[in-house]
Image (cartoon, rainbow, N blue to C red; front, side):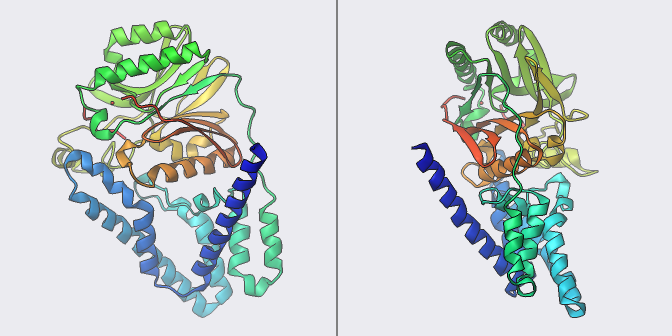
Length: 408
């Protein structure tokens, strides 16, 4: 049965690779309207971003946000097209090389408000190729210069198949990865919070009975300022003598509040605050009018505060990088030395949409590139572990539960 599943997986990848290469071939060689290409790429890639406004009674903003994003990428592609046309009039080889280099490296520098989810690499995740810049370069060169290189293009594709990911050995920990399925309009309902808390403790007891070493909950699994509830903290500390508990919750410090991970182990508690916030979701990335924008669009909610840097924590003898939702898709986080990442997300903001799949592909890009094992606990879709090339282990959804803070 296992061999059959691997065979099906291989053929799925082969078919996907064929259509991916065909799409890039059409992009590089068929004449098209650059603004239109960028507009519809941005629209279909990011149409889900506006969905979060449903929960602020701002549904009218959804199409406006989507169109603005599409226009941005339309203008970007228009500029790329103008440069390409200029170079083409001078030297066709220089024009093709420009496209290859831009679509290999250029989008690393296109990150409006730090948001850089448009990455050609994600299209390679489910292909037979390993995701890396050298692989992208070889594939794009083979496609762009197939007329000039002829059969040598095939050699470039073969060379692109050679690199493989190098993953570390998994930690010797029996980890229970929680998946919850709580709609966003219910998750922050104050009348439902007690139910959610009870469900969390039931899951902890279940993990203890199953002899697990660690249980990992999603982002904001405790939908409150957990550090202001000493009874809950005491209970979690007591349970941490039996099992290490990692959970998402809010953190209030003076007049500032944070989106945080709480780690309970052997009666001790550590709070790990989020470093990189979601633009326009958790903060307003503008040098002016932040309070006015929050008052008009977000009911007067304040921006979150950030930690100075990405943080790590230890479980037993193993060090883990902390990632909360958006942070799990940021390449700089994966450059840190620890080999293991614990990511907590709440994807219910964007259900139903392609956002969870896009997030997962980005996580997989960086996990493979930097050789990290990722434990990703999510509300809204199945949690998963990425622990070897092309492998994603999913965990079934648990119906559980989540005041209306400005949180992603």
